[in-house]
Structures are given as C-alpha cells and as structure tokens.
Length: 147
Ligand SMILES: [Zn+2]
Ligand SMILES: [Zn+2]
Image 1 (cartoon, rainbow, N blue to C red):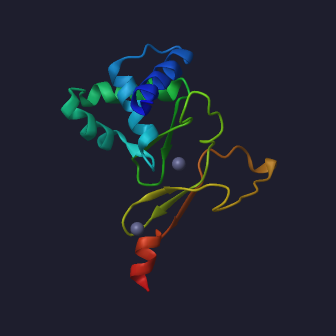
Image 2 (cartoon, rainbow, N blue to C red; image 1 turned 90 degrees about the horizontal axis):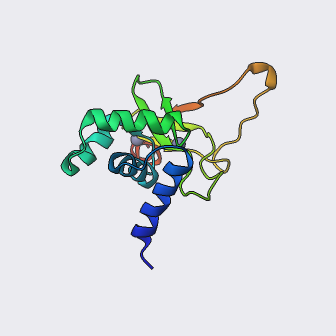
C-alpha cells in the first residue's frame, strides 16, 4: 500500500472529473487544502509551495480554477481575507465537506470547521440562502487561558 501515490491519483481523478487538466500546481494546491485541518489563505498556501517552484500567481489561478469547478469553497470570515477549503476530501467522498459553520477565535485568529455534532442551526426558508455561518468566540486553547 502506498497511500501517498494513491492520493495523487485520487487528486488527478478529481481534477479530470471536473474538467480541469491535472497540472502540478493544481494537484499541489488541492492536496494542501485536503490535508489542512482548517480553511487556508492564498498566502499560507503560497508559502508552502514556494519551495516547490510554484509562485503566488500560479497558486492564485489554481485556487480560482478549483473554486470555479466546485472542488474548493471560498469564504470570507469577517477579516477580509479569502480562505479556501476542499469540498471533497477524496474522489468518492461526496458529503464529508458539506458547507458548515466556522468558529473564528477572536484571540488567536484560529478558524475551526464545525460539524453537525458541534452545532446545529435551523434556518427558515424565508430567511433566504445562507452561504457562510461564522461564529466568533474563543478556541478551546484561548478559552482555557481566560479562566
Ligand atoms: Zn484561540
Ligand atoms: Zn470548514
């Protein structure tokens, strides 16, 4: 078993299924998004890929392409910085990354993805269509410091 190789194949497959050519930059960006435990900024991704010869504007284009075909989701969580997260973790996995609320820690700035187990919200249809739900507060680490 070679999980790493399989993962790249999986990423290639996802890109091809979405009609995108599987370029090294798109593969690298999508893999980074999938490996991250929280939404990533363009800056964070660029910093990680610089050493692999992928420049900022290439990363930016890759993020736009991935967002356009629905492999990534783009969000603005109140600090005027776009963050990106994958909509699917693997090619066969359709619902692990449904849109979900996020918690922004107002102390350290950490963003946590929340699941149905963490918070449930019921939104009436008459409200309209919700794109992002942002909760502000303290992450467990900062909450512990405050006590
Ligand atoms: Zn915090
Ligand atoms: Zn998230």
